Length: 276
Length: 177
Image (tube, rainbow over all chains, first blue to last red):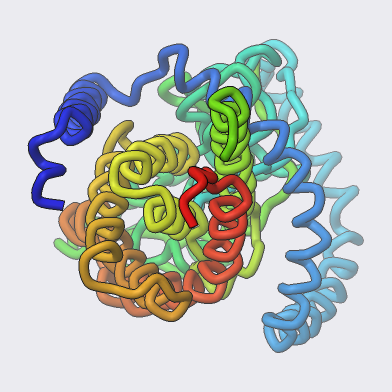
């Protein structure tokens, strides 16, 4: 073994280590490398991941069934109650809808953007090291996906944003990530804030709306939507409902803890908004 | 004794098998929800890199470790080269330790794999969770780092057996009895 350090093999290993350290330093300084080798890797791995994801849907649902049985029963009870409430609310729905239409006509609100274009996509990968539940989708630049495209659930709830695009796959940063930022508003009170993730709440699948004023009239169960400010996210995309209000650490503002309408931790199918 | 041509094709086929095993491990590692307990999921690429380094020696093992690390860097969306460097160093070290001090047994491998999993996960937690100042770092350590290392132990065994099988199957017959 001692002789090994004098051989050309050891020098090759040191050379590889220096090369890896160099590309790491380069990638750290310039963002991740998006050159050909990475795209080739993605093309090689994506079909396997796609096939595996299809298998895993069956396996994981069986696994989840047994590991989360208590939570499922509790959720079922809660949903039954919520369903009864919603049925009651449905009575008012048509009235509210008509009012909304009238309000739109009255204030002459028009759509500022053309029809949104969606690309349907499946979650094909989740890495164990991602603390904030980022995932890989099976659509890439060949399908018209670009970095900063918004990701929504089947029901239209915001889930995250595309951070990296390869030829046949893309990576998503979820709304649970503290680096995620989107302009948001509480639909009832029109209080503006920033939708972002928080390490305090990510494990529970919750995100926050920060920078609300201390005197905000926002309360639990208010809907939060995007404003479209900044141009990255389309306006009026549903995010979720306010679960609770907590004072920000300095006491200068309030944070609304949001329960997203769709859970980024477990979502399996999404839509990518490629144009709006 | 095998002909040189037969030996060469056998070695190429061996590394093709290892590469396919690496692709399988990549897919299993990123498969949504597979063997997931809370936030914790087992690691597959790390035990594979270690197993190959145990059977193929420090040079080939270290290079294979770097390739596995690059694959992991890609799937985890991490800075390119970081996990590659970690796995390369670990593969080299494990191969040297097994050659010099340890018997090549499944139990020893499981211990090594668990130790390396803890090391890699702790480094990741330290650099990407604790040092950026995210809250709940110790909770994350307790409920993600440790369970992930524990979950990696049972999956290390079939990976070890598979790598061993490939290594034995394509072992060079040099005619020495």
